[in-house]
Length: 336
Ligand code: SER
Image (cartoon, rainbow, N blue to C red; front, side):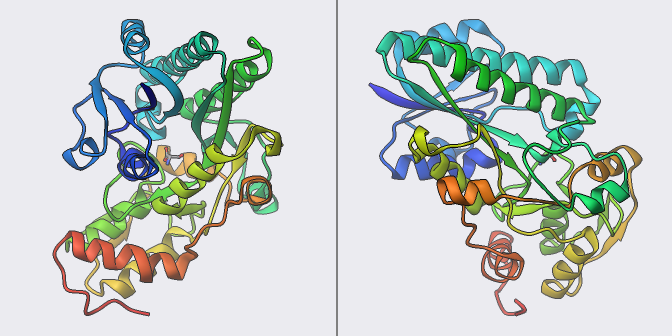
């Protein structure tokens, strides 16, 4: 039976992506280190618990399924990768090589290309100082590809690996596509181990009436987007004919408040929010090297990236009402 494989399906992106794939009629086989949350599992045709670095798991999948598309979401994020660099390399690079090798073998067996979606990141950029960050305020795909973190190095290398497999493997092979994701904010889930986590953490803490100590300075500015828009762009990219795609890896973005501006929006929605700023040097340095915003013109032109939520809409129409409902608050004090 033809199936769509989603690695790391139990994570934040999987939580929104898997139901969308199921709604399109795709039979999703989920692979994750841990059993899936029930609300993700209920949308899957099957779930496999296993490690992407374990070659035996890939043999098991090819014995049982015809995999026609892969969404390779499994990864360690930037802060965790700085703390465990060898593990990050093993999972983020070794795991991706296994995914690509598997995709190639599936393509060869059936004589048709297998589309592979790889979520890359703004962490593949590395700006050396604040002046350069201000000068390259909306970074283009080819600029400053000098990552400063293990995570950024892993992801940039894997972009190249995917491109290599697409161009140089047998004629019918891997069809590899990337979006370079900004910080993602979901009302339904919280990230773990990333460095853009301060945005969603601030919001979810305020909705729960908990104090939040932000680990970057108030003037820290990086791009963000809400999870439904990120998943929408991922699906648009995967649905686009290869002949229309001019790049392997596309920037996508939506808005880019500073941490202080983000805190102000949280405070206006949750007037009791207790937000303080105490920069963590390692995490601050990571954000300082990331661009303030991305130029996503190629994604808009090639596959119709068009985020529905700008910053006011993201707060007023999605994040605030949805986190209020998640934590059982009335919708009375949503500000406009
Ligand atoms: N959200 C990721 C992180 O913070 C960046 O892509 O690691």
